[in-house]
Amino acid sequence: MIPVVIAVIFLVYGIMHMTPGDPVAVMLGADATPELIQETREALGITDPFLVQFANYVKNLFTGHFGTSWYTGRDVSERLFAAIPYTIKLSLLAMLVALVLSIPMGVLAAVKHNSLGDYTISIFAMIGVSAPTFWVGTMLMLLCSLGWGILPSAYDGTWKSYVLPTITQGFNMLASVTRTQRSSMLEVLSADYIRTARAKGVSNFSATYKHALRNAIIPSITVAGLNFGTLIGGAVAIETVFAIPGVGRLMIDSIKLHDTPTVIGCMVFVSVMVSVINLLVDLLYALIDPRIKAQYLKGGKK
Image 1: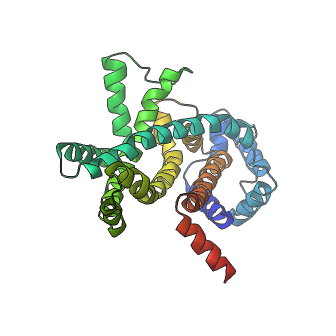
Image 2: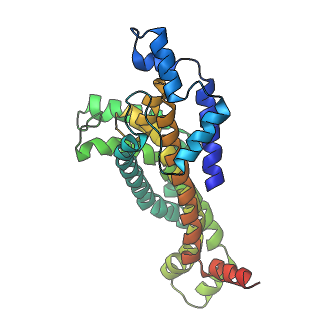
Image 3: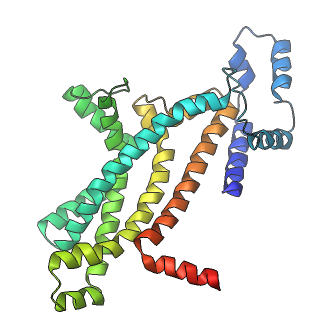
């Protein structure tokens, strides 16, 4: 995880370094004199070579210091930790809604294969995978806020302001997991051990939900884990559209102001979260499928 985070920091730092514009001039305003601008640039270390700036930032990062915002003068960690709860709450709500709906829908489509319900769920999943997130959010805002007036179009601190962002952010994940669960369930239901279980008198319900579902759900966990990382990163668009003061909106505002320390702090948070989620997904495999745990233990003994 550490090399991944360093690589992300290097790329983002390089992009911000090559971006046109002077952050100091933006920070000080139009009335700042050239002498004041130059003194501020030297104080912030912007006049140092790129590799020196990057090395100093990584050194400070591993001591727990995310740097100081070039625009506000506040610690980046203070602003970042204030924004993280909004992003985590939105992403967890979106993932919860997506999983609660997608797993049953995928199983139902597989069990009712080639039926009207299967076709309906498949078409819905195809639309969900194809529709851009920002378009879904805009359409929901036009319909539920401007049209019906039942939900707020922007964050106002109430639970209602999380409804539209949650649906928007979880829509693509809902469709992806539904398609994966349907395909995996169809494959497992046609396996030999399921046919053998039914031949021995096991009920259709037990064969489907006790034997087949446990194996068929593993690919869905992989897709859900990867999509949760996407939810964290995709919060940039959602939080901007719905004015949620999370990490995504903080990063967009900081990019506009060329506030490199804050931008990199946001990217470090996203990259660490994605890496941790991938690790948790791998650990969940062993809890759901004992064969994976047995293979791991066998490999460890060797």
